[in-house]
Image 1 (tube, rainbow over the protein chains, first blue to last red):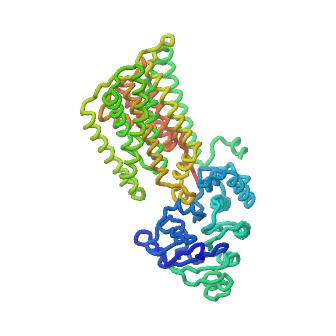
Image 2 (cartoon, chains in turn red, yellow; image 1 turned 180 degrees about the vertical axis):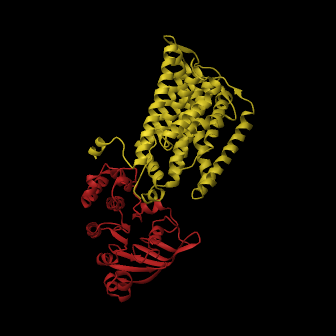
Length: 237
Length: 350
């Protein structure tokens, strides 16, 4: 039985600039896996490559045993990979509700979509209060909640979260991480990028440390939390 | 929120407040001036006023239909598709050949209506297909290229279509028989041509259908999402290429329909129609607020109306000054409302 997600030795470049040199990551069904590393280490590019926004120059990506590198992004979404991207990328001139509906763009099971809408609004009651507000007029924290919720509306098998706690007040960071654990309990596998490495290692099962486009260290979250090099460089102890 | 709205009519920095005041005063002055001009003309000759207004709105409807193509495409890929006016011209020539030669209808009877209906479908398909091909082969590869490259490609495409039109239509204007009934009806003293009535009966439902398509269907939602953020749309599972192609298709179909309506109501085709009407339609799109559908419709009707009134009223500058009046008013409106009549200068959190 193959892993849910298998990224094998991908290399990714923006024009001449190589953002990812050699990254291999696997994610098993039901896990929370986190990628940590400083700015420019290639974390976001790795996620963008998985969801088909960029094509890798070399390497392979497979999802449930099927090759997905080179597939157009919208087909990858159809396979059950939903991505809450860096910088939130919500649709600013649409309402919260319309944003959530777009998250479920490919789904035709109306009843289930409505049920999922209820479910995400229960996770983030704040969004319920703002349901008819234009998304671009909300605060950064609220937009972040919307970005995560919108990805959940796609009923993902694998959820890619890029810095979900970026720029949030400490109370909200806690809320986001509690929510990540809840989402996993509902049966969603998660690949998480976090700046806040301490919090990420607390919720994750396994972690990869990226540096200059390469995987530097990988292992269980527990091991990495105890690793001197990791704690010094990324956890600030 | 409600409190702030009550407390001050204007908001923002002192500079913005001053600007809003100037806008308000300018807009009031222009409206009063226009109202005064119309009023003296209504008193002078009410029937002529009504007739000129109707003729103006009829042209305005055609401008509006073309303007929609500019605005749709600009809305989704921020490209001013200069070739759009020429697509309209080719559609007019296509309609002429289709009805007169290929079907062989030359008078308004049952067969004429049949030819017209068939041509409406055919020319809309024609416009859609040509526009999609243009997008596929000329613009798609350049989607991430510098803006100027795409713009120049669009200008080149305009020339290309223009020369196809020159070859097809010939270098001089051509007269065609019309198949829509051409008589007049009278409302009191006001003469309205049947053509005008048919034009509205056919053109307006098309505008409404287009608006429904964009605001109420899943495809329309995909278009609006794509216009705001292409990567994010891909992550929603939207096929961005298909959505952009679809946008070109419906813009092209509207230009096609406009070509037929123009050819039937004016009865003449010319290879440089695209330049003449395209420029006015583009102006209409900017006037209404480019990217805004109802803005394009409003802009088209407003320009048509101004032109109609200026050309037809006893107290006015007259036909020779037609373009001058239109563009002067455009400049004045844009000075006071740079984003267009219905356009909003949006401020969004980044």
